[in-house]
Length: 345
Ligand code: ADP
Ligand code: MG
Image 1 (cartoon, rainbow, N blue to C red):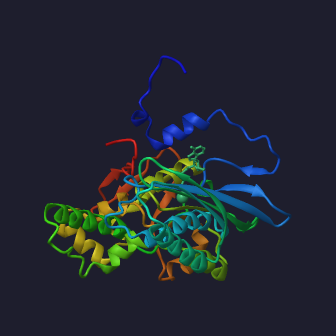
Image 2 (image 1 turned 60 degrees about the vertical axis):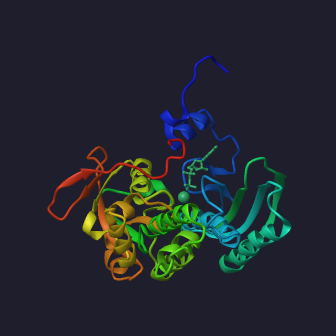
């Protein structure tokens, strides 16, 4: 190691990944596509690719056991991985689960975690085929890896968006972030006075979006039924703005989205306003919605536009034109990624 010291916070998560992996090149002939998309793409047979992805969740960084039941945590750890396979237009098939646990957890707690994992395995039709277990000195760490499959003719990368394509999202955005804000608020109230019961009434939707996110396997099925293959796709784990910038960078294009088109559930908006947060900010920068963000060519506009699962939010323009959010008065603001930056306080 040299004398030089570069702070990780200067690089951010994606700058760090680029620094660490930039000098690697793939040498194995079956490695079709490595780092840089939601899943790695491996040769399988004439017709199919194998997909591989992994995600790590760390207590205190990604979850707080004060309000996150272990069963939900298990489910979420699987769902977030399955979501990365969906983002390649593929189907998840197997998972492995690795744990680092401190002796703070009794068997019963870990059984509860595995109940959630099992529930997710049944729901997403994946098999748990292995993992690793070790001890931890500071909290619980869960790593799930997922293996999936996609037809070579169906695969969708982050990099395929073309000028004039339309930008589309599934479902609605910002709810998981608002759910987290409610949980954080009630945690603070509880810490100040443990006799006060948490007030979670009426927040079912946003809490469920935070605590039990769903991977959009149904969207992959809908694409098959509608015979639509998006030109590019990514799942929204870090927030719409951040993912849009990944997509336009990978595709070497620019993007334009309209703020009035952002799909936001009424319950999310109401809660945002109660917190004095602009609902659009939640949709743009709140993470963990696990919806799919994709682009389609204009010929698919009527098919996708007519489907209630989808909202067309903007269009792709030429590289170098800039990535913009356009408001209802036509004013434009440059999009910036404020997603989750784990390395900044
Ligand atoms: P996602 O949000 O879809 O899970 P990430 O943003 O975490 O994807 O990762 C982007 C890309 O960088 C992926 O291809 C991922 O496999 C790769 N990657 C992330 N961390 C590392 C690492 N420490 N070493 C090698 N590759 C990594
Ligand atoms: Mg992803």
